[in-house]
Image 1 (cartoon, rainbow, N blue to C red):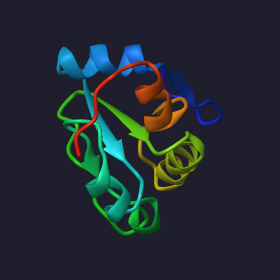
Image 2: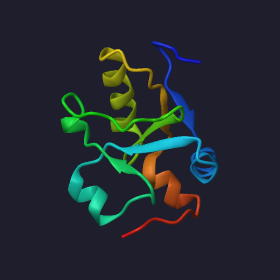
Image 3: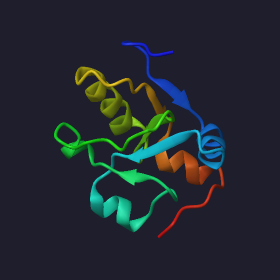
Length: 108
């Protein structure tokens, strides 16, 4: 359920399952160089620094989930999206760092 005040923290396992089942669109809000150096397969890069003017990918009924390196920028991205009137309230808690710590693969 959408909330103006809560960021829904998803675990790496939650995000992996959602990606595998085609239920989420993962948005990497790190800068382009960070994304190009290492990323979660399937993540779409929309840097936080450009999020205000950028168009987010069409979720087509899926849940948009933000992620960054450690979770701070993705939580900010959720807040920014809400200010723009977008229904976005999920992020990968701990970011790609938590993803890797869980033993999940990345692409270089």
